[in-house]
Amino acid sequence: MKTFDQTPALSVSGDELLGILQALANPHRLRVLRVLVEGRNYVSQIARELQISRPLLQIHLRKLEQAGLVSSVLELSEDGKSLKFYDVTPFSWTLTPNLIATAAATLTVADRERENGHD
Image (cartoon, rainbow, N blue to C red; front, side):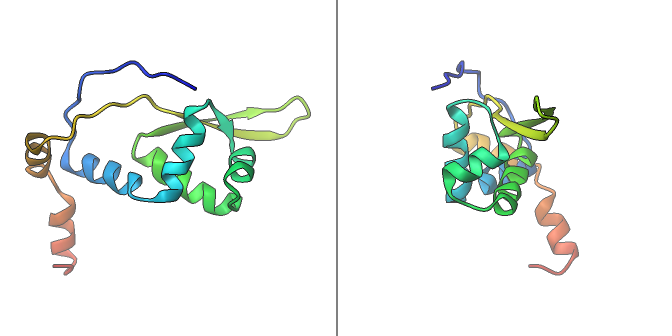
């Protein structure tokens, strides 16, 4: 199992925090992170291990990557196949009321939703 150094809590914008929490609020994405904590892996192998389709897995991986929780790199195998490898991006947060309040003050997502009539 990988071990991650404890990094000091970073300040995040409200939109970043919302993206992180939304990414973590899905059981499939939590399972993907569980697999990747063991070490970097490629899409087909992760899909087999989690017993989900590659297209569904790629949707979840994209959401995790957008939130900054995983990173990817495209590599060629010895037989010339293109493999996309994913790895966990080290992270550590201490979720406190002050962090939430500070992040909430910078939210722009709610402003955009209000402009689009999604009150």
